Image (cartoon, rainbow, N blue to C red; front, side):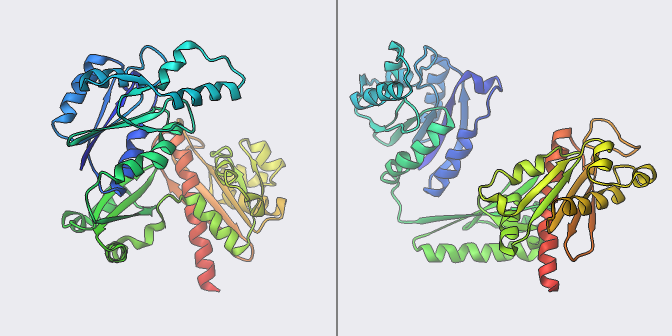
Amino acid sequence: MNAEIIAVGSELLLGQIVNSNARFLSQQLAGLGINVFFHTVVGDNPDRLRSAIEIAEKRSNLIIFTGGLGPTKDDLTKETIARHLGKNLVMDQEALESIELYFKKGNRIMTENNKKQAIVLEDSTILPNNHGMAPGMMVDIGDRIYMLLPGPPKEMEPMFLQFGTAALSKQVKTDEKIVSRVLRFFGIGEASLETEIIDLIEQQTNPTIAPLAADGECTLRLTAKHQDMQTAELMLDEAEGKINARVGQYLYGYDNTSLVAELMKVLKEKQLTISAAESLTGGLFQQELTSFPGVSSVFKGGVVCYTNEVKEKVLGVKKETIESFGVVSHECAKELAENVAELVSADIGISFTGVAGPDELEGKPVGTVYIGISIKGKQTVVEKLELGGSREANRTRSVKYGCYYLIKHLQESQKAN
């Protein structure tokens, strides 16, 4: 089965929102053994949508639409598809009752146009919307399937997971099991990673190897197909082994994890507490850390020390250190890490000081960053980065590197013991 995803909405073409639905659906469809060969985005225009449908029908036997199921006049997806397929639109009583209940629970008055959201294609399989109002639907016509899903990800994603996958699984005629594994790398660029394993990528058949880049990280998605699940897993193990033999030192986790999630695991396993002193990152490290429930067991507190005055008076950085070396320096990062750990009685202190941009600071170029790591009982380490990019990118990458270096030093400490 070959699929095409058509996202409907002028706001997508205007760049007002990102088409995250296509990425989510592609990932989910791969797990069902369904190939996605095309992504299409079309505005709220019936003629252009009809043209996109006609093109998709020539090359895909599963067409999934997202968006255009709402109550307003520019929500025209199901109307356009109904005319194209020669189908009637009918009121789904269960969906209407669900919408009425939605307004009743919110103590809001339901306007007449909201009833439009309960209108569906006749003879379609209804996909309930437990997180919004407009239901989804699936129509099977001969050798082609049309699936309509709402646009908001908070509605579309749970609907597809709860009802869409089950509906499609019945249509996929294969005994093959599909198993995927995502390898997550940090500290190596996408181009360098691909260069190291280019022959494996070029020779891929089963498992397949798909490189991806996201937010300063690199990932490889391995996908194996086999009738036996255990055999498919072994195929992934073999492929991963070949990759790790070349770039395994950069591998930090699997699937949907993140650097800060892996750091949380290490801290909890070792029962260590952490504190942070942040200058250029402005509290971003602490924000990432405190997004996890139960973080109070490892995070003691921290200081956003954006000015020299706070660095000196709150965190005790020596005045002569700043005068002699500047705040963007190895020496300042070292004192910040050590002093913040002492200030809140934490096992670990981490500091971030540098030049986020857009201008130089203390004669140092944009992207110059020092990360101090003070671990109780160990010698303080300071890592220097020379990043490039926007102000926000430098701040985000600094936090990721902080997590990465901290994990690395904690693992090395364990090996030494």
